[in-house]
Amino acid sequence: MNKSTRKVSLKKPIKTDDLFNLKLPTSVSFSNNESKIAYTVEWMDKKENKYYQNLHLVDVNSQESVQFTHGNQNDSAAVWSPDDSQIAFISGRNKKMGIYLMPTVGGAEKKLIEIDGAISNMQWTPDCKFLVFALRYNDSHFIEDEKKKKEQPVYRHITKLFYRLDGLGFLPKDKFQVYKLEIATSKLTKLTKGKRDNLAPHLSPDGKSIAFISNRTKDPDIEMDRDDIFIISILGSKEKRVPTPDGPIHSVRFSPDGKTLAYLGHDNPNDDWGSTNVHIWKVGVKGTPKAKDLIPMFDRSAYDESITDTGGVGEGGDIRWSKDGKRIYFLGSDMGATNLFYVPARGGKPTRIYSGKCHIKGFSVNGKTQKAALVHADIKTRVRFKSALHSMAVRKKRCS
Image (tube, rainbow, N blue to C red):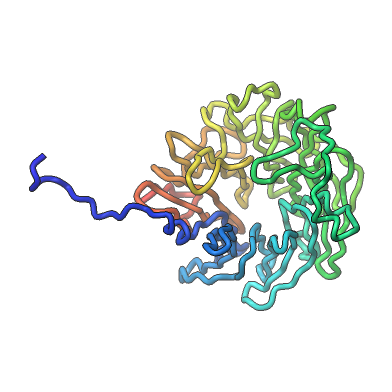
């Protein structure tokens, strides 16, 4: 090649130390009035050689962003109170998990509870009096002697096929159960029980009922893809099963009128490892209308399947209803890109809302659902936080 026509790259090669400068947004949460967004930023501490996460807030109109929490800790799962006056979040500190509250205008945080275990799927009740979530205690929670908690067991009695995970180690013997936490008193009440995990609770719009997922087969480790949906009262009544086809279930969501449940799943419980597409299904809370695949012709799964150097494949996926109950929003991956879609609640062909050669790692809609907050990256720029300030009801947008 002629020297005069040779292109010279001015880009600097990445170095090891550059990794410590990365600030990676991992999740977003829109306020109910759609004016502010809480998002999580992951970063690395070079001295400790560990990952940490803190919460940030951005004003949608001014685009001004401020760091909301600080310190070498892992803050996540920010959820806005119904009146937008407070944010509840989960924080991992000193090898324990806690639920904290902070006023959205800033100020001192308040620790509601600290447990030796894991917390997920946290949600406010409409009256702002309770938080509902799934909780599982670690084995060390049941050891009274603090010194013995730090000692490794002499042996482990393994009774399950699914007993260990990369990054987590040996799984606790305890099962996830649904709890509610009273804000004023920090009183913790267990709402479900049993020898099976009761997962992914979701509150009805009136705050009176909770839907959750559970595998009640003889051995869930062998029959992993045979989940069921159950509904209980927030007061702790007897659970009721919602009839659905055999298959895996994720992300159960009540419709705005509380009469219908949408979920991610499929009807092939004998799937040979991910060959069956995960779609959006809809079923009446009492089993009528019967469960129906809303996107049967969609030749993709309805969740983020992109894998990058800064994060793994999306676990389980997420779906959200529009305020009027006419649409359901979800992510879908195709040809190396992950885009934002919606499907009519009656079913039909999905529509791309935010499309192009990009990776949407997460999204959030709330309130009137006229805007969406996205964790977004494209092939031209680095991973960044981005708020899509378009009306999803009438416009489509492409990655820039």
